[in-house]
Image 1 (cartoon, one colour):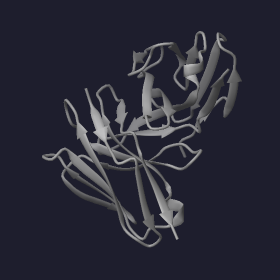
Image 2 (tube, rainbow over the protein chains, first blue to last red):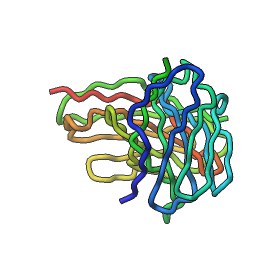
Image 3 (cartoon, helix red, strand yellow):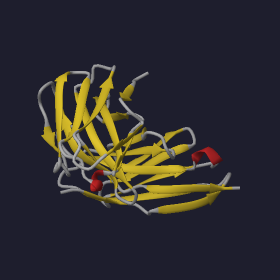
Image 4 (cartoon, rainbow over the protein chains, first blue to last red):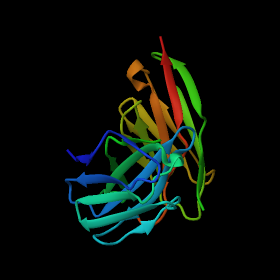
Length: 115
Length: 109
């Protein structure tokens, strides 16, 4: 079974703190993604990476950065946390099936509260 | 850009059939996926349609009409455990997906 793990299920931080969210996958997937999920807004893509040291901005990259030093690990960084970054953060990795579709496998999520 | 529309909430009774619709606008189309997410859980892949028609996987089926930019997820013999949020998604190029805002399905006794 594909396994995507995230470093914390719940996190409480203060405004202005630097926050690191870690994600590890064990299936040797090339692609990894960070989303945030907010009620009524669905999943919004923050950043993604298709290879080590490669990154691409998603739909809402402002206030975030990422790091992919190893294939299995993709980190999301909040340089200076703000209250509007309180959210559920979901990491995913993906593979392409024989039919050509990209199936994404998600981690359990990190619920971040910024006070 | 890409956008997807789904109803925000659907309610049905146990044993019934329910259909969750999704309309999309994309610059290029490569297929429509569906994901399920239980409260507090991670989204999990359900199905994928690249071509028009119905794909069946057990109690769940997914339909696509590319000419209408429309698809739906059909759940039969509803069970309480089917209560969850369901998201449609389309590839956005570069191996990324754009998700709809999700439909919360409530199954009642």
